[in-house]
Length: 291
Image 1 (cartoon, rainbow, N blue to C red):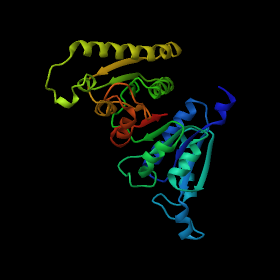
Image 2 (tube, rainbow, N blue to C red):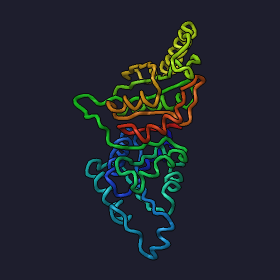
Image 3 (spheres, rainbow, N blue to C red):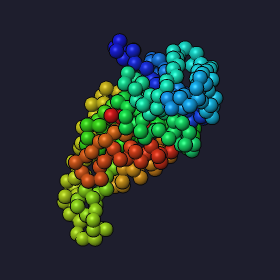
């Protein structure tokens, strides 16, 4: 590992909610697996401090120092060797997280049923503004029984997908999990039938060509990484379904879904930027968005 990599940290937003504590536990495991320090960040908007005078505003989980101390104690009980830093920042939440992410290996924020809480409501803005990969954490609905749940990565033919795939290989290795590589696209739209509601004559020859091209492209993306990670257990999935629906369905049996940010393939319906935003709201496990 390079000295530059060692200087980076995993940053997790802390607001006193159960979702942020779950995010912190996930981030701690990632940090341990990658030999990185963990930074617990609590943001307080300046406007709130202005009206509160000398006192920090009261939040659902307590004041900033109490929130950070409680999270740190919880993490140290499970990971005593983890290097943990804490910081309280007077700034808008999304701004504080985006600023901290500039030097981060990964940014993690919690989200879930209580999306109105301090961090949950800022998840989408944070993903758009952070220059590093961002995990929006929520408790997975699938329960592990025996072997680890799979890591799912959605790809198209964009550069962002290539980076997402590389990140997914690395995380699956660290988690000792199967990697499910998924390419989903709506065939009707790809062959120009999307506006016909299924009516008209299907160009089967064109359809075969497109399918062959996409399968070849998937192989081209996967093979170099499979050689880099020879112990990886890779399962490829190629489906005629919208990426948003397909990945959301797979999230119900996964521990993490990985997508590229603002990726746009050359085929209609192959847009992972909007899919990433959809997953942030609807996936039933944590979502990693990779730039």
